[in-house]
Length: 190
Image (tube, rainbow, N blue to C red):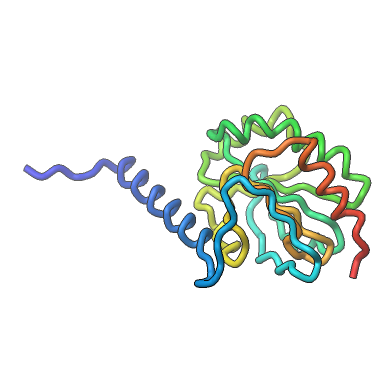
């Protein structure tokens, strides 16, 4: 007798396959490039920055978001999930940096990926002052194929011209993230 996979088992296999595809796509490098070590904080000089891909989607609490509408502001994009222990550790620090830099023309955006909507809402209910795109399939992360790998957690700082200025490929904190965001916010537009 052959057994058929249960529906939840098929979903788990599909989710694992999508996550593997995303990881493969995001970690791709040119033949002559060596990927940076995991855990690095990557900073790009203005002349080295690449345009961020389109970042659009449905917000966790309803409505929609389009990164293109934020041109002229610095946008800190944090990839997170409710099941991610490092995401939980960095949450209060991200919140504080968001509050500390709001007056500098900085906005924050969360990208909730590979998660359950109810669990994600519960995670953000008590502390989150900035919106999050609900992206259970990791579609937004796949758009960053020409950029350094995006993991969970990861934080990208998009400059006022819509270019990736810095990437933190690990959990972050106030002491690390705050100065980077302030420096990028202080850059002249142009």
